Image 1 (cartoon, rainbow, N blue to C red):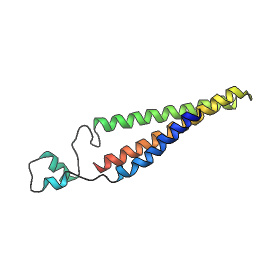
Image 2: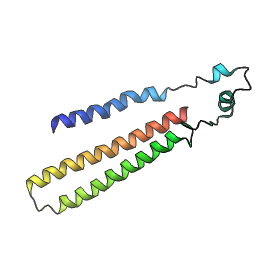
Image 3: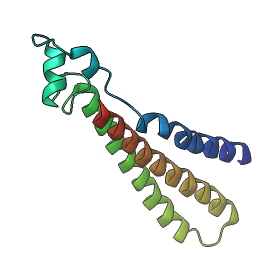
Image 4: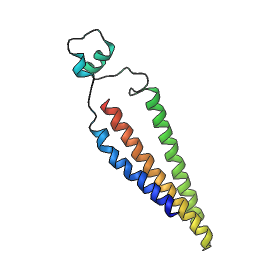
Length: 128
């Protein structure tokens, strides 16, 4: 239990270590597009819009990441609700309370990681 908690804390802290990398993303396309007018990439960079079918605002990967984050968030909330109800109806059984407390903690950490990962993905996609 202690080792799992240490791993979860380390994973969460690593997100905060990696966050400045995502914040300092720069546009590497614009400097290379000076004087070029017939390239689709340069036209996208100039207009501020992207037609990239994978990473664009409505791209396949963007949609898949949003969908997976949404599903993971819903699962975490359902686990929190079920564990909370079982916790309230456990009638003081110490073994059940210990198991449910762990479930609640893991679901809360999973929900936090899901929210943070979605925020980081949105931040990175906005910089592209």
